[in-house]
Image 1: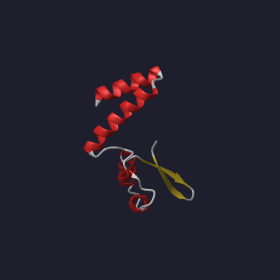
Image 2 (image 1 turned 60 degrees about the vertical axis):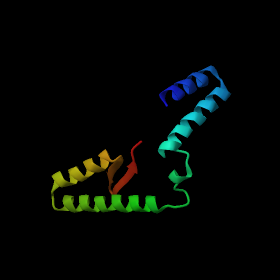
Image 3 (image 1 turned 135 degrees about the horizontal axis):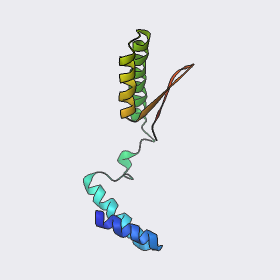
Image 4 (image 1 turned 180 degrees about the vertical axis):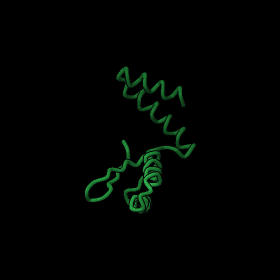
Length: 105
């Protein structure tokens, strides 16, 4: 795979569209064998938003637990929840209207 990516980068740098396309095809084929092709329809969530709903619900639950810890003045627990979310790629911002979250970039 490393060799195919290297060839693709070289072709891309040289402006060789057919070489770039061939390398891309080779890399996608190798990723497909491993079940990791990012363009495979199995990774699309556009028509099935269950994953987004589950994620929203789980983050909301964690934020509720964090808020309960803050009310109890258990700031260590509240910080630990925020740190765990950060580790998972969720950024939490405290606002006057309550916490707001987004996926880290």
